[in-house]
Image (cartoon, rainbow, N blue to C red; front, top):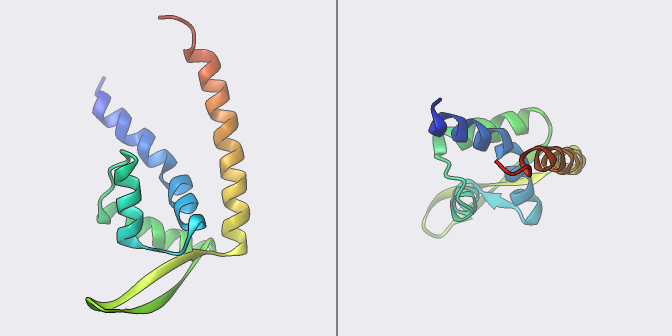
Length: 110
């Protein structure tokens, strides 16, 4: 069994929930999202995040606006749509149910 591969799959499985939760706190620039994920030990690279942001936008969960930057080109700031907000609530509920169920199983002493 490849533990690193399994860990990576688990992280990818919660990336959408975590990304929506980060953006729900405040409108976010992609590098802000990456920094927040990294500070929580969910290491993500731009090549993983950008396709996810595009998919979430195409699914109607996110929208964005451009803002001028004092240190370079304009920045794209993401924010949740109403659908994104309700999806976050549903994902959080599903996460809570899943972690409760898993905790019941893995809490048995090994």
